[in-house]
Amino acid sequence: MMTEEKTLLSVEDLKAYYVSQKGFVKAVDGVSFDIKEGECLGILGESGCGKSSLALAIMGLFNRVAKFAAGSSNIPGLRKKFEKGQEEGDRPGVRGKIIFKGMDLTTLDDEKLVEIRGKQISMIPQGLTHALNPQYSVGFQTGEPVEIHDEDVRLIELKKQVLEYLNLVRIADSGFRFVLDPGSFSGGEAQRILIAMSLISGPYLVIADEPTSALDVTIQRQIINVLRMIRDDFDVSLMLISHDAGVIAEIADRVAVMYAGKLMEVGDAIQMFHHPGHPYTMGLMSSFPTIAMMRMKAGGKRPRLRGIPGDPPDLTDVPSGCPFHPRCEFAIDRCIEEVPQQREVESRHWVRCHRYEEIKE
Ligand code: SF4
Image (cartoon, rainbow, N blue to C red; front, top):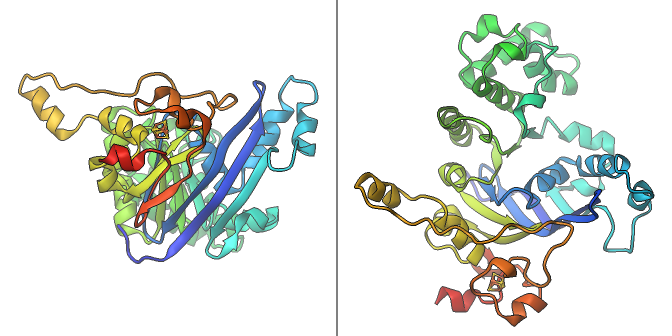
């Protein structure tokens, strides 16, 4: 829920490229958006569209991961290519601006970034099974972000804080279970422990990367409730990354729809779900069962989910012009030849489509 209209994070023309075994990947390609204080922005898109690379770039971790990808590749010279770069404007690494509380994070050195990462900006990572270390107790790991940034914290204070946050995310019997290792907790509890870890150092921005994936429906519901509680009760901004329009619809104030490394549409969540302006957003929304459809189903009728034909592109081989053109029912020749720009079509509503005005009619 928005508290005031003050910008916390402003991302301007962000590019994050890397080289993989398959070739040159433009994972984030000219992305611009902002997040206000206290706002929840949902980043919605199919798998492999660049959402997680965007999160890594904001966290200042993209280059490290990209270098690892290049270094671990078997293609001769790939590592050299990463370090030396290719032509200016088309080389691996992060470019553009990430303005957080007035600082451009892309210009900060590692030491300064470490101060911000985990304390002012924290992340709930994707891939539950590897996120918690099986060798350390849950209590130790929950308190770690505080200890890293404040070595003088008193143990008794830290323990109090750890228990407070474990209770907050509804870990039952945390008073004696905090000494146990992660293997003693269920998948849903492990995800909630990760949420406690992301909040304990009092960040301004929490990035949640697919926080409900690989969880069953009941557990998903619990996680959504905890995320809603964060949104409503904490003075924190949330960037929620998901391929699931249903999860985004439950929590986000605004939505940014991502496709092939670019944002296709950014706008108010209610407007985007009811009146999407971009053909890709329309496709995503029509593959999302609405309450009306569920009622039809309950009444014995068969509602139609339209979905989007075809598959998302391989980021090493993105189609020319509008990257969505091979799947778009409105595509014309111009869409194949010319990349559409991200235009503000009305106040705080951006669409990247040559034919927005015609399609809207
Ligand atoms: S620019 Fe063309 S291909 Fe792309 S979404 Fe708009 S109409 Fe479809």
